[in-house]
Image (cartoon, rainbow, N blue to C red):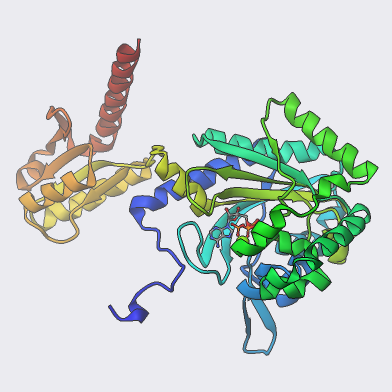
Length: 437
Ligand code: ATP
Ligand code: MG
């Protein structure tokens, strides 16, 4: 197939046989977030390039290697969002949200764009669900968003996932740590990758997040931030742990987590799975107390996380978690002849007005082919309209599963089908109660 007839490398089409799963998962995430007071925010897919380059960090992989940046026809440099936090912060500052009641809690679902090497769990267009909480500096807030992420993962049926937490301190305590890191990496400079050699002078913390195997091996032995935390950061971290323990949330302390974006401070965390290969981080987040002020807003503590939706779906698939398909076809109205086709259209319309999915022939097919199609759609009931039915005003509704036939007035089809499908639903409920009891 010619290349232009294929989706761009690293992008995915999600067809109806899978899209319902994405919708279910996304709605579930928004619903659980709302239990914690988070409300949906929608921000643009692209922003002025500086929104990301300055705030995600000039020395991060995301900014150095992965951004989709281009000049628009007006000559402005714009960038497809590689993540949503920076755009959300820009938005809440611009609209004065931070001058209102705090904490302000927002959540989002949206596409992200990173020019990465496509592989399982790593795409160029992927989707994140995330939350941001502004104006809360207490460790209780850190514990609350971690609890939310965990509740989402658990509710969706995900097991075998571990929570790793760390504190990367504040500007104050990080100074001394960065010096120690610099000293450590200086001694091993010749082995670092070229990007990290450059990072050494400017931002040695970034070397800890380098994906090159040699750099990450060297990073394993590096000094850890937890040995350098100031009193304030240490006590914040202790209280986060205490809050988590009080809620029965199990965690592991991993002093090597720094996260891939520059704006984090104090708490950082990841939910990691053993089941989806190398790209194992399903959710990452933490505090970013300095970002709002850096972006021109008033000094506001903030924190959040993002879940990679494709990675989450991989997990659900591996674990064979079944997700409900939602809507299903209740009635197929087959028709013989033009008059009956028109009547079938009208019956479908009445069904749909009642909120039921109903289908009829749109291709002028013969009866046999129509019923074959009805079977493929999984219709629960079918009805056949021909001249006789139109003349007599009576039809037979066939219940596909049992083969039972029910006579009814042509004008009463919607009511009769509603009644029959309620009965059928009750019947299968009773069956399952009997089987389980
Ligand atoms: P990684 O270490 O895997 O590169 P990251 O630190 O770049 O992740 P974040 O920027 O914190 O990730 O994004 C949050 C989540 O978004 C990740 O934990 C992951 O689930 C998902 N994610 C990030 N990049 C990609 C990608 N290229 N393809 C698919 N999902 C991704
Ligand atoms: Mg990354």
